[in-house]
Length: 128
Image (tube, rainbow, N blue to C red):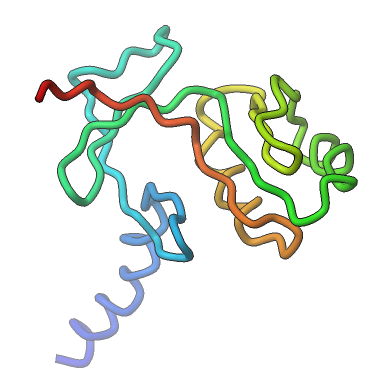
């Protein structure tokens, strides 16, 4: 019995190591890849969120800063390219590639100087 318990304790970090997620309002939102839609040469990857919504992720992020003067530092530290200033403290930026978008988004969210960082999600249009 002890060996089974030890096995599961050693296995647990590996089960959670490959979680795909982003943060929304300081809560982790889990994503599940949808392989039938995703293509290697596509400009976006598709995921299903916890509520069953399908979202596409490209190499773009929306970030909101506490201090806009820190923008250049953040762009350099994370190898980001500024695409557009949306408001005086909110920016649309581009990551080096789409496979890094969620990781960079999550790293930025943890920085104290950033109010939020989300992937620029592509959502399916819903008819009324």
